[in-house]
Each structure stands twice: as C-alpha cells, then as structure tokens.
Length: 263
Image (tube, rainbow, N blue to C red; front, top):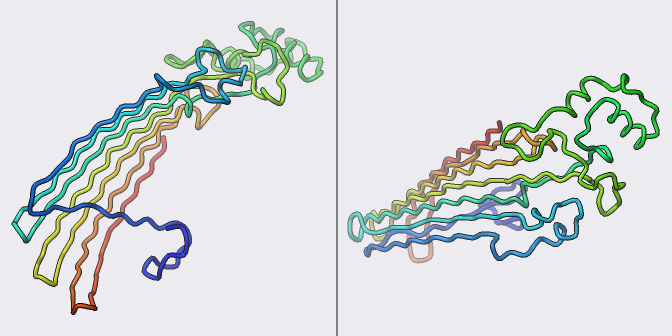
C-alpha cells in the first residue's frame, strides 16, 4: 500500500506491506517446485547491441537464475492446532547488471610509459607535459596489472575505441564485464490454534537472508567488489475473538529485525 491506507496502518509516509500466508488444515498438503532460467534463448539487449564499446562476445550478457522451493502443512492436533512450513531458495547471476563502462584517456594502450602517457594528455587536453612531469602516483596506477581473477590486463583498461574520439552515443570508451550475484533464502512458519469456536490464535515467523555481490559499486575498475549481506526476520502473534456475529476483536504483537552489512 503506497497511499490512502486506513488508520490501522499508522500515519508514517511511505509504503506499507501486508503479507498473507497459507496455513495448515485437517488434511496434509504440500508442494515442490523448481525453475531454471538462462540467457540461452535471449536476444541481445537493445543498448548492448547498438553500443560499439561493447565487444561482440559480450553483446549477450549471461543470465542464470535458479529457484527451488516447497511447502508442507497439516494438522498437529486435529481440529485444534495446525502447522505450515514453506521454503524457497533463489540464486541469480546477471552479467547485464554487473557490467560497467568508463572513460579512459583516448588512445590508451599497452604502452604505459611516461612519455606515452604525457603524449595522451597533450593530445586530449592540449597540454605540453613532458615525461618527467607525469605524476608518479598516476604512473603507478596506470601500470598496475589487473588483480588475479579480474577481467582485462590492466587495472585501468585500454581504450576499446582504439583512439576514436568519444561521441554523444559513446561517451565511455572502455567496457568491463562483470557478474552481479543475488542469493536469497526465504522461509515461513505458521502455527494456528483454535482455542474455542470464537477464539483463534496465530503465530507466524518469516525469515529472509539475501546477500548480493556487485562488482563495480565501489569503483569503476575491477577488484573492489561490494558484498552486501542483508536479511530480515519477522515474528507475530495474533489473537482474534468473535464477540458476536457483527463484532470481533483482534490483538497483534510483532517483532521485526533487519540487518544490512556492507564490506
């Protein structure tokens, strides 16, 4: 609910999320499901296909998505106490979300000598630097190799346009592949108790753990991957009592715990 919610939601702005879950019954029931999706039959994304900066072998970013889950519910005490469990695991690796593009000096190649870097600066910015005037920190960075397991030869990649001037259609002249990963484990547990014909009690627990990996969140160059470990737990107890046919009362108490940790 994004707006126009009723008084029981409170007055705080922003979205409110209501979750309805299944419950157990006098009959045992359950389900098992799985799904696998890949980029095997995908077409190249429109902007990837049009972008000359992206090499032909990266026009179709890889996507792998796996889902496995199941549910089970039934009576613990017939007509009185019912239980229900559900679990789902999701794993997704998406190259389209993990790729990045950046702007490097026009014409940057494997020649990272001080004289070559001075020439690139003079050509691009109209300066008149000499080799001895190249900043030593910049020189060291441009000559830093890519970290083990990271794409490319250099920490700062070569110019993919090979000296062609960037244009409005191709502002960035270097492309770096990467893979964003998302993993989620979700579980629901319910207990429903019929105390009397008029009084019911429901205890619900929800668990979610969804760490993500993003290769270029911290930097435009590889080697500084963001690892975001996040999740949540929700526990609630709800008592519903029917006073008469047109009047009932509901009391709910709940606890929410959220976690988000970057490294």
